[in-house]
Structures are given as structure tokens and as C-alpha cells.
Amino acid sequence: MFKRSDIIKSMLPGLLPLLVFIIFDAFFEPDTAVIAAVVFSLMELGYHFFRYRKFEKFVLFDIILISVLGVISVSTNNPLFFKLKPAIIEGIIVIVLAVSVFTPANIILMMTQRYMKGIKLSKEQIAKMRQSCLIMFLIFTVHTAMIVYSALYMSQGAWAFISGVLFYILFGIYFIIEITFSKYLKYRTSLKYKNDEWFDILSEDGKITGRAPRSLCHGNPDLLHAAVHLQVFNSAGDILLQKRSSAKDVQPGKWDSAVGGHVNSGELIENAVIREASEELKLTGISPQPFIRYIWRSEIESEMIFSFYIVKDDVSEFDPVEIDEIRYFSIKKIEKLKNAEQLTPNFCSEFEMMKNSGLLEKLQTGKKK
Image (cartoon, rainbow, N blue to C red; front, top):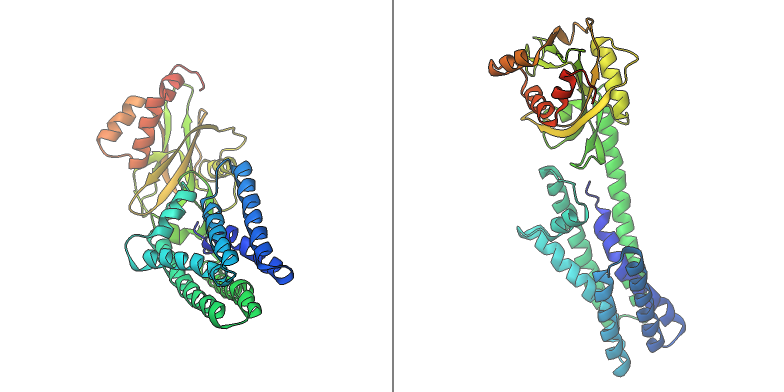
């Protein structure tokens, strides 16, 4: 999930050489400070290469820029060029942020999608990202102007404070406000949905990116959350189906997987399927076998479904609140139900997966997969 601090973290490698320059410049000549900053940049570049096996482009750009400005500063005996270096870097960032905020070409979004693969941002998250970029655009613009002014008209100490320490103070204040406001919103949400079930929100590769109450997940297909299914076979290869309660809002009266339910926030998938089997069919002491994981989307919600199966005869108990009826069906009978549109679309899809994977064929011959 997008974090507003990601943009600042990406800048830190370029800001560290500036900090080195400020420290050395306080005790040595400007040329020594320039050399120290360049050497530090080279060390930073080498560390990144040995750790990630690739050069960090931002640090490489920083080395080139700091070297050019340093050579100009030392050769002309005018430190002004070097003092303008942080303003040049921040000016580039201001341009990137301006393009991301005021044009359709959202560079920050493209960078986020590149470095956070597998995470799909919703429209609300993209809107929040643009809002964050706007705030940072304003902060960087003001700070860049202050750096230029201090480099031209203020003392070395004032420039060092404005270009270095003040940067962290400004963003420190921003992040304190942001964190405080975020915690306040979470507190309000927790109060509003304190009696609701909470689900973990997932990326498309299954990583947890947040959490949300059930009532928000049902109604927002952008909130991908985990669910479990249990397909129950008997020794003859027939499949147990449940008839969904006629009181349900979704697919009432349709035949569905024997067991289906959501995974609570923080709950293990294996524990969730066992819990749901106990609640819906009163099954205990079972060892469900994993079958498949897939994403199922509808107009109401999006689920990452973890499907399991067991072989068990004579299942007869069920929760009458959730289920109207349970019954074993042969494969041929299920095909007829499918043609008569008496099955839920989700089960129809998973039934085809069972056929294509060879699971049905193996269980028809009495062999467990």
C-alpha cells in the first residue's frame, strides 16, 4: 500500500552527501569538503551495487552533479555553485511533483507501480497520492526558494541550516501531522465498525497491504480479501453442495460449495477453513487438502479464494441459518444443475477448475489427490 514517506525515502541517498559536505565544510576548506562529499557518494554507490547488484541512478546522478558543481566551486574559488546544488536537486523533484499533480502523466504513480509490483492502487488511493504530492510540491517549492535566497544573501551557517536541518524539520512537522491525523482516522473507523468483522486486504500476489471491516469489503471490489472454500466428496466421487439460504442477499437459493467463508484479519488460512467447516457443517477432526488459489471478482466484492477438499461420507448436519439444504450430487447431476442455472457462478467456475485439473477424475476412481 502506498505510503507518503516513500517519496522522501527515495531522496535520502542524495541528501546524505550534502550532509557530509556541511559537516566537513564546518571544520575544513571548501575543496576538502567537496572531495569528502564525492568520496562518500562513491562509497554509497558501491554499497548499493554490492547489495542489490545494480547502480542506484539517483546516487549516480548525485555524484555527477556534486562533482561538477564542486569542480566549478573550487576552480573559481566561489562556493556559490556548490551551495546551489541542493536547490537544483530539489528543483528537479519539484518538476516531477508538478507533472504528477497538474498533468495526466503521474510520474510518482509510475514509480510506485514499478517498485511496488503486484500492488494495484484504487481510485481513492491514487487520489490520496495526488493530494500528498501536492503538499510535498508546496513544501519543496518553498524550501528550494529558501535555499536559493540563503545561498545568495545569507551566511554560511544560515545556508547550512536552511539547506540541511530545516529540510528535516519541515518534513518532521509534516509527518507528525500526517501520523496524528492518520491515527485519528483509524480511531474513528475502529469506533464506527467496532462490531464488524475485519478482513486483511491483499495485493494480487497475496501480500497483506492493510485491513478493512466486512461492510466496506462488501460493496467495494477494490478491497481484495481472503476467503476459503471446502469441496466435500464422498467415496463414490459425488460432491456435497449446500443450498444457500433464501434469506441471503447474494445468490439466494442457489447450490454452492459445501463450505465457504471469509478469513478474519490475522487468521491462518488453514484455521479458517477448519473453522468454517465446523460452523456450517459441524465437521470436526478433518484435514483439508489444498486444491487451488484464485481471485474471484463480482460487482459486489473481490476475493482471493483458497480452495480445499476432503473425502467424507454421510455428512448430514448443517447450520440452518446459513443453509437451507445439503445434498451429494453426481458429476452428471451437477452438469444438469449448471445448465439449469441452479448453481452459483463461483461454484460453476471452480467446478471447471476441478475438471481441468484432473481432481474429479482421480476422486471418481477412489484415489485422493
